[in-house]
Length: 630
Ligand SMILES: O=C(O)c1ccc(O)c(O)c1
Ligand SMILES: [Mg+2]
Image 1 (cartoon, rainbow, N blue to C red):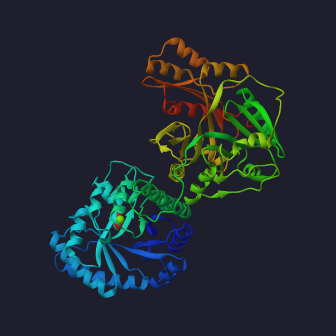
Image 2 (cartoon, protein in one colour):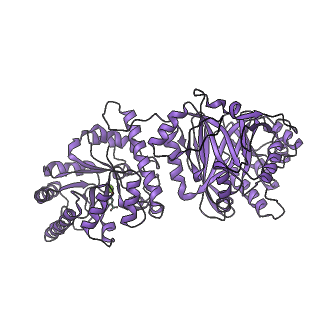
Image 3 (tube, rainbow, N blue to C red):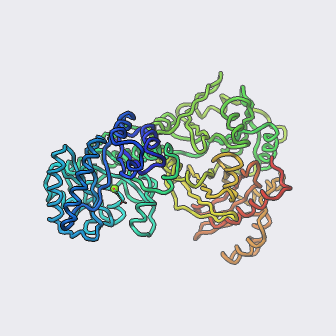
């Protein structure tokens, strides 16, 4: 599989784009004409730059409004074409994309258009060049790849072929399986893009909202399966027009793009085992059972405050690391590591961010396989020197440069708690509150990072994205996207802040980067938990009376239940026969907090309807000067 990406996908000038594309591991590029015209170097220089990066120019594009024109416009189009052929020769590009005409005077007529392409084929062949024809979804006469194919078929010239673009086919709901009957050697090039399903004008949707395969809602896998079935073995090229990507980090977007292609090919080769695809071999998406631990990086005074909070939540200090200033807290299957060491990753994370969750441990079936898949998907590996008596636990970089460790049963890594920690009898033990496991982890990030991280998780683990939820914060909007395994083993929420005025946005600004903002613990009896916590001095997030009055009205709950909820500052949601109860801690540090949840009757969500009220309560507290920052 040869991978390619259009220069139009990325921010920067041509030089910066090429550097990012080469670093991300692509084999080739599509030179978008605008990028070339804007560049202050000639075509030979650009051609050399591309080759110096070890890249090939797999396509030059677009050439517009070519086919079906009356004279004298027709001759003019051919003259224009000869100029572009000159340019391509200097660039060292031998394939040109012609997109279907939108010219108001284009006449249409399938044979007329085929004749134009037949003549074009003669001219291209003289130069040793080839031309591919792409149906734009909004073309004047041709907007369907089947019509474009018919024109190419009738042009019947070896230098004229078809170009497919997943966006144009899928955006118009053209069944992608119609591609299966096209001969693979007549397809000259394949462009790939996904997009979120939003009702809007096709041109606007295409030019502003495309995203990488797997980041949107189109069935790019189905499209690619059909392409693979034709025997096509040319480049797979990303052509993604996206306003956010054009203003983003070219390196990050290029890495996301490469990951999306590797993931797409991996999916297609699993679904079409009989089609030989030169796909990199890697383990299948990883099953994750849940969160094995979260690790805080803290100063010693903060660790003392955190200990107080953990105790009030019913946790016990159960272990001390054999050689480092690291303590282990536990309740049920929940493990919280508090690291105050003055060396190592946690310490550098502390210096960069202050008190923060710098490391998440995930329970997987096979840690080595997880890392192998992560590596194939271009994830950044993480290594840290291992001290005497410590286990080498595989790890990669995740959100905000934080670490993801992988713990499995089969390799003995799960013994880390016994191997690296000495048990301690907690002197001030509190009574357990019945918190059993980590229900979910919420990572707060800038809105622009959400696609990057959802692709990261979805390509690595067997998890699915849930629909995006908008949370109204008093300071602006926060978007929340859950990513979860079908069995609920792993549940993550990605929260994207658009401004720094929101509670989430302030967290990013104050802690200098994206990271875990909250951890939710599961309980099977939240009323009992709340009572036990109250006895241990837990101070919940106060929820205003208005909320409970509305709750009673909305769900018709009986007065006793509403009174009990209010007494404990619990939040409530209900969907059909399922319900959800939530209890929040007060925020600490730069806005980190804990949540306790009880899911009843298979409740599958995250209490989205309550989020605006919870956020308002938190924002109120964070503004309040009397609240100490620990
Ligand atoms: O938006 C466009 O005009 C445009 C141009 C060239 C393409 O390959 C394409 O898919 C769209
Ligand atoms: Mg295209």
